Amino acid sequence: MLILGIESSCDETAASVSRDGREILSNVVLSQIDMHAIYGGVVPEIASRSHMEAIHGVVQQALGDAGVRLSDIDGIAVTYAPGLIGALLVGVNFAKGLAYATGKPLIPVHHIKGHIAANYIAFPELKPPFTCLVVSGGHSLIADVKTYQDMEILGSTRDDAAGEAFDKAGRVLGLPYPGGAAIDRLAREGNPKTYRLPKVKVDGAPWDFSFSGLKTAVVNTAHRAEQKGEAIDRAGLAASFCHAVAEELAPRAVDAALKSGHGILAAAGGVAANSFLREALERGCRKHGIRLYVPPIALCGDNGAMIACQGYYDMLSGLRAGTDLNAYPTLGIDEAPRI
Ligand code: KG4
Ligand code: ZN
Figure 1 (tube, rainbow, N blue to C red):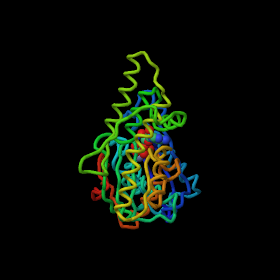
Figure 2: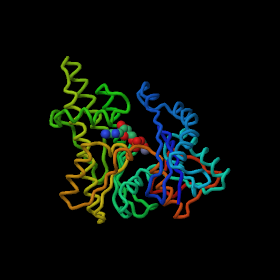
Figure 3: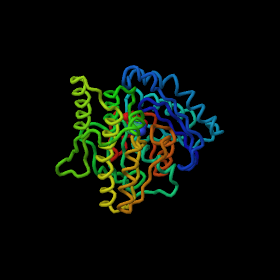
Figure 4: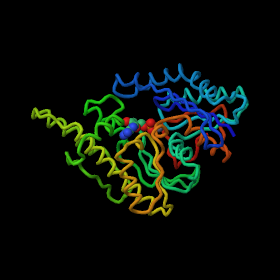
């Protein structure tokens, strides 16, 4: 079964054609990052307008790269929540138009479930149930993935998402937006023991985490050095920060995977590209005999293939939307689809 997946929830216009949920025939990602970088963050209005300009070409290219025509497609999957509302609406309306014109089924896909589904593309043997650590620019949570659709949140951030913390720390370190990948690179040259950063514990919620204290500590470290006229060890601060974030996330995710009894942990989302986090997850899973799945970096960030893949499983489950489908800026992975 061929699924066309369309993604426009933030600053990437993306489309992909996948076969049977596991095989990618094409995966086109047009990033708007250069346009937003000068403002130090995503400007929603610019994102929506850029999606409008790009979406037709991106979808055409995804069909062309896959060597298929629209008439060959069995279902049109689109991210409808969560994300920037104006950005989501571009993909949703484009997909609605395609579905209406062709009479093909329209499948509404949850963006975070899409991130989790990136693992199905990379690891053909992986099937629910398993535990998943989702760490993206807007979301950080540990999920019990019971089936391809049914998910429970075991723990989540009490404040910022991991990606937000990386982007803020990146700004303090003078790195361009988004700072995550650049901090990771800089951190490889530093010593993670250079700066002592706080460890956080949320009382009564062992799998919840928090990044605001860590973020503030990085800001204060940089400001204090500036006031004293001292130079900060940028690589050391980047390494200390990456190490602290990895130690905040990995032990909790490993513990949740152990206690949930699945014995399988997957990672998903843009921050899953972080090398310190990957190493910490590998160490923790090796120690406790848990099987770990971390998608290749190209599938961690936003892309259309993950939407096509989740869309395939959603279509099999009977999920469909009509031309009255709306987009939603927030929607939990544990909530019923809003169709
Ligand atoms: O999942 P994603 O592509 O978009 C959202 O759905 O939010 O995640 C983007 C986030 C950004 O905050 C970016 O800085 C972060 O992922 N990121 C990283 C790395 N690569 C991307 N954070 C830490 N280390 C990286 N290597
Ligand atoms: Zn995302």
